[in-house]
Image 1 (cartoon, rainbow, N blue to C red):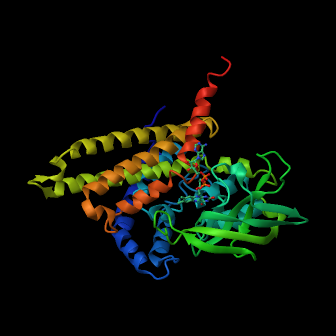
Image 2 (image 1 turned 90 degrees about the vertical axis):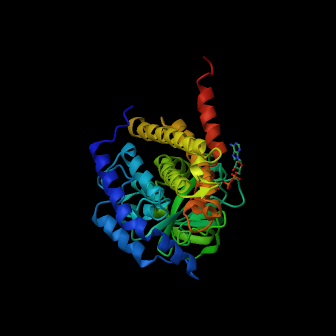
Image 3 (image 1 turned 45 degrees about the horizontal axis):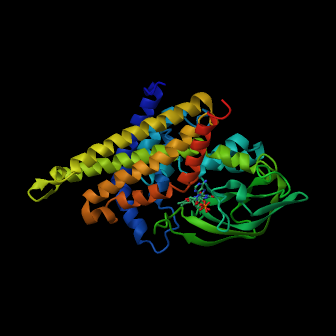
Length: 403
Ligand SMILES: Cc1cc2nc3c(=O)[nH]c(=O)nc-3n(C[C@H](O)[C@H](O)[C@H](O)COP(=O)(O)OP(=O)(O)OC[C@H]3O[C@@H](n4cnc5c(N)ncnc54)[C@H](O)[C@@H]3O)c2cc1C
């Protein structure tokens, strides 16, 4: 394994670092302040579209896709440090058109979409003109098991009829969200892994109803948000099924390979941001006649944070390298390992940074509380920790079977 940054990775790290320092960091706290004061936060403020246009012009766009026809064509290993930088900010991923869940949905359309689906949905997603949601999780069934999904998409001649209730559909509140990828049962008689399909559903199709927006740890995460969405006798053409009926489970698994570790890359960035702020705060504020850094176990905490981040980064890079070199299937254990480790490390480090900031750390004046809530959600989103541990253990134990 060689984790030395390639010349291309170094170039993009530098360009993204400069863009973040010059364009995003100077406006971000004011952006959040303005968003927080809006009566209706389900809007895109003009500065976001302006920055998206600038990022696109500079080629800092769609960097998550390794295929060179869609962007700079960075490998997963090359993208990791770039995504890490964007993870320092809550808005940078969308400005670079590299935000979940659109990234995962674009990956699905690149990999499984036919020409007409790519033309209709992938093209505007790649251009950042529209947003999309992934409607898999259901309130009424344990959705960490993707084969449990009960919503239906029944074939009826040239059409598919969708019924069911989904929740946690991220992006449902975004004013530019135009399409959902819906997972439902097409053939209840088929095996558990081939009874579901994924269907492209325009958000304005008759029968699609966003019933409410959920908060995550008290945050609305506007303007993207997380919706509870009802699908009531929604009819779409049969050609909206992605890759044909019965491929839903396979697509759900495939969707979450690189996408899962993009979250981890960004979490390392959030942890770095928190450690940086923890160090600055601990040196610039005094209590009991000493800088905070020199009180109690604060130096120990700073050291532990550095150790934890370095470990998590190395495991992220290993998972990225495995995907590039050996494919998602061979990297399954590493992907699950880092999916367990990265949120835990980010939570620990951000928590220590909040503590060092005293009361301010929990307020909206610093990005720490929101970053903590985001990291906490990633112990569930894209599969709870326990499911990832179960997979790691299964693969570990499989080595000892029938020696
Ligand atoms: C902020 C946020 C954004 C999200 N975005 C999306 C989205 O865009 N689209 C979407 O479809 N979903 C989304 N989700 C939903 C998320 O993927 C699910 O919450 C997750 O998969 C768990 O499903 P569940 O909530 O039904 O929990 P359940 O399946 O009911 O599981 C509950 C708990 O049971 C335990 N458990 C489950 N399996 C095991 C096991 N094998 N071993 C031991 N314990 C186990 C775990 O503690 C688990 O947390 C999002 C969630 C959050 C919080």
